[in-house]
Length: 133
Image (tube, rainbow, N blue to C red; front, side, top):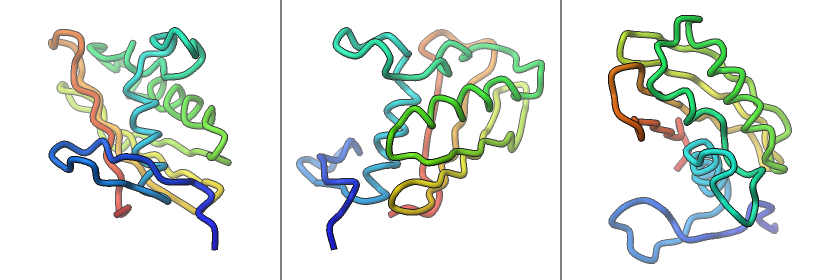
């Protein structure tokens, strides 16, 4: 069976020239999209996310706006059929989002953690797959 998501080099630190494919590759690609400020790539100004612009915010709306932005940005990837992003926790330190994604190769879940006010840009934006190996 053909892998519809392809294969690429892993971006995990310390792995050298390891490759990643399937849902693990999709998780890596979506994490990169969310960490990249929209418009930052001169050759593709529509690539990326508006989520980095919210780093350092206080998330006074309970993280709802960040969840909507995350959902819309994930659905920009042609391999993503749908994304449903919910707020898991909001603390003075930041917000944690859970992204349930239906992709062309199956379901995937990402956990997105964004730092709140008090940090210097670039503040932390961590995106980790939940149960993808």
